Amino acid sequence: MIVIAGLGNPGVQYDLTPHNVGFETIDKLASDIAAIWEFKKAYNADIARGTFAGKQVLLVKPKTYMNLSGDAIAPLVKYSNSSAAELLVIHDDIDLPVGKLRVKKGGSAGGHNGLKSIIERLGTQDFKRLKIGVGKDKSNVVKHVLGKFDPVTRETMDKVTTEAVKAAAVILKDGPDKAMNTYNGWSA
Image 1: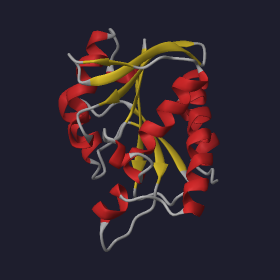
Image 2 (image 1 turned 45 degrees about the horizontal axis):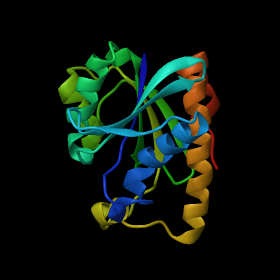
Image 3 (image 1 turned 180 degrees about the vertical axis):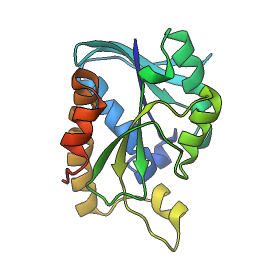
């Protein structure tokens, strides 16, 4: 089974913030396949099951807060009889401009605390990532990722998260190399 995790922070105060574009994207994916979310206390995560891009998937939204994402995701990878190689993590990236997507196979956390937690808990960095550009305010990165998008950027992000679901389908159907060729130069 393929595990697809969207990263974000739980709570309405974080809805529609740059740090929660992973949650937004995975919610759209779940809606597209009519998957129903249920909270699993043992994993401190919302999970949903379904078929996406012809594959059986377990969708995950950790309720651990971003910096402890691995505490929910690593046990769910094991629970689903998957491996890190079958994990796709969808997350925000401040080093990408708003409107950009980037597919990556493995690599370091790149300063992203959610990825750092997942790498630590899995014991490997060999999992796929779908990065969603949210830009950055160099004067206050925390305020930027936890603040709200302005209306114009919000409209762009709605398009980007919709396209990110399509990119995830390409990753699953055709592999990450095809997805990188298709989406790493894409812009909303």
